[in-house]
Length: 308
Length: 135
Image (cartoon, rainbow over all chains, first blue to last red):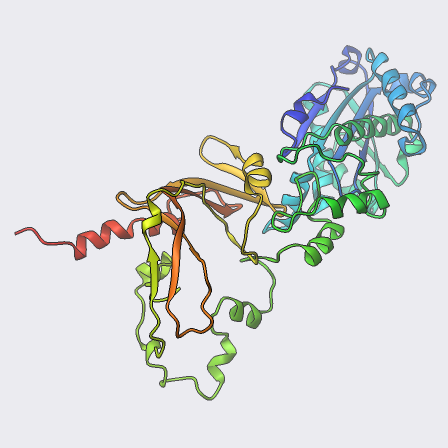
């Protein structure tokens, strides 16, 4: 699997696709969707689709694809190889969501949560298959969240398709297993060959599975914590594991959309809290406050300075 | 103010200090000291057509370069010895100078309404209203 396009800029989301088998443009097809790397605090999350003609389901089964989680890395590589060899009737596409995309989406002012991010990635991939002329009829989706709502959302979005959303779909439907293998292989490669955009010299790549409870991952997160910048973009800042470590060991950072206690924020910025106007000393005694700065200056945050 | 202390700025050092890259961040960082800016920040910065992009602590920033008003130089001042009381005079020296800076917005694209861009128009206006009048 060639991740060159993602590795060229791993700060953004990237789509990688196989060639579309000719037969998939003429025969009714089934499509499976699965994800890899949802839980880890490190690296990208990958969404994968795999599709083939409904008439070839048995042939796909014969490749002995299975849920990627039950396989070793070598077995997954091997199975991906088999899927690649079956390219005359099996196609795939991946959406790689970089850890930076995950962090900045989840932490943005108008919060964009992981579920919406996942659903949109899945919808984007199905739309890609349709736009490419794949004769889609059946869609099978693995989910970690509530299946019914997700199924309703997808059915509404794609009224012409027969959508089945099922927990553990990756072990029930071979086409979903195939999608899970594609996604997991991409995630494995991306993590292993992570090209740090930051100038950190030789980075220790012994970061374990990337799951927050893996001791190796924990040790790595402690080792690469920077008191100002926190972490390289490889780390998902929106994960509580990362936030807790930063809260304890890095400089505190305040953003103007922080949900900070009003009085505390005011004290920090040397402003008056609303409450202070109700105290005894407030009112006409303060001579300096009678001078009002013109809007021109307040809008530009310009102050005349008489002391540092 | 009852405080009669004076702050001196040592300008003598300004001539030979090096120019440095200055970033104006849309957040307050409770840190006063060196930071690995080039390793973590500059290295990950992207130059797009009309803006620069980067992220800090997992938040997306968009920014642009801004020049100091003509005839002005930016100074980074550093206090060498902090006085023990607010009655003592203070001395700051110029630790570096800059003629442009990069300012960053949180998520919004840089535009002409940004506070810092508008602030840069003050010197020209000040000159117009306070400068000598031609007869």
